[in-house]
Length: 291
Length: 268
Image (cartoon, rainbow over all chains, first blue to last red; front, top):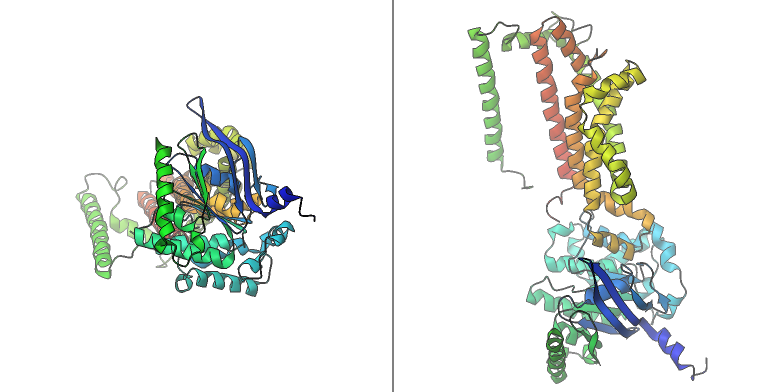
């Protein structure tokens, strides 16, 4: 393909592309604009952190990318295709772990690998283009329908990845909050999604656990190359994990600040001088957003 | 609340229960002994016990009641309840799922279920006898109709209360729309459905005597009706005690099943 065809190539490299996205809902007989004119993109392999005050519509944005919600205006593209429904190419981690209590930790992680889904997961040649290298996790697409032994190996791999091999047999409610959220991340990764959507995943955890899970998520992101879309109200978290950081204003949510960062690639992002500077810039933007 | 009590506490609870039962029997015995009312109103515990031995065929000095032993009466009733409850619970779960998942069906069927639920079983027994005769079918139908509504209502409510994020999570993990009821909604609603089943079995119990008013022998209800005709109050009381005791047993069984099947109840 000749290099002058610049736009389509860039569009294909974007894991997520939002153009003119808006969301309006009716409450108490009035139309309320939650999101307005959002233009946003995330390059494949990047990590987008969306920060904003409560009620700015950042979760709504994530739910539209996940396919739980249709935008009232604009288009939401994931890997070049319009989002119409949830799918195993987009893993979702909620603020509450939302693990299935009737299944063990192992059963929860294996949920996205069970038989009937296989064909769905392997369909779509587009996803193959997003594969970078043959790292164990990314190469494991479409395990669904595969032999039992292969599925079990995959579950074991994920359990090791999140350090839950010892408690695989336990039920979710027998785990601590941090362990539950680890299990939820492993569950979301199981079908081999190219995009991981996290909706304030660590907000309900204590500060120490939160920082540890941020470290683990960053390591996981670097190891697997999965594109990340993270919604958070923590400025630290955004500066630590976001290769692109977006600040939304209070309702109606509009983008009021956007910057790219290389901090998540650093060995110790929190120790970098740039970390403090980035934090300060985002914080100022968020504070401006509230007023 | 799910942790098993220490052995000593359980022993104490069992002792308390035994003392309460013993106390009640003692009062009963004293009242019967005082002969305030004639035995046809208040039979003594001794005569009920005697009827138990005679009708159960345990001692050999009796051959049951109305041609069947006590065990045969009980078994006939339990069989009817088992069949009626099985159909009622099965139908109730399916109906509840439909009502809970499809808003149109909720509008259409919701009032019908409530209508049936409010009717006393005796009200439609006559109709069932006209339709199905006097053999097993009207009895099973009556028990089915009694057991179905509580399960349907509990299931529909539980289905509506399933967190939307469970469904979203499953869909994001590759589950198709058609798999959601079976893989997510049903297990997520299981604790409340099991409570509905317990209620349904209870309702079936209160209905079984009514179900056996017409041609109910063998059957505990039939036995009670028959004994009433001959003023055999001790047999009536025996039948009542037996229904109550077996009801306690099955409720305990269902509670155990509930603990085993849905241990996350109240914890997730």
